[in-house]
Length: 113
Image (cartoon, rainbow, N blue to C red; front, side):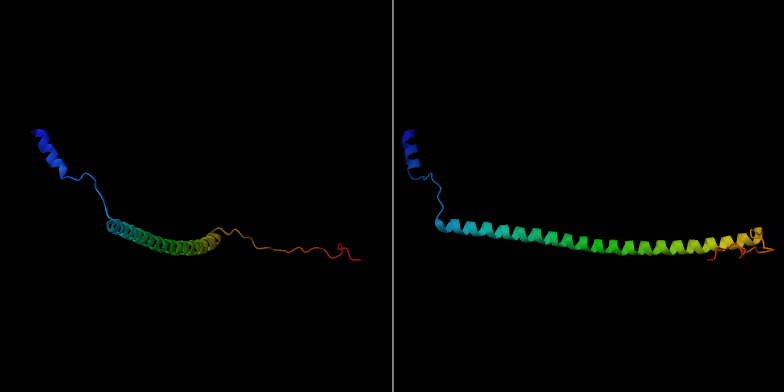
């Protein structure tokens, strides 16, 4: 008896899974649309990152120009300070001695032909 019940049960059961032509087309379109959406999301993320990189590069260039300008200004101010210090120190130590007599080259020893 058990065997008869199994046969009756399996008689109405279809074991093969089939998909029709329309279902395959719909599934293909859905997969294609999903891939396009994922691609656009990835491109958008890359564009955002590129924009932030461009902004950081422009900031870097501006900061480098400012650094160069400040270096030049610091060097200029430092040289002015050194000149002022050397002038102040020269007054106190009298490094320069006034010349009493200036000796010029004699004009007779000059070769003239």
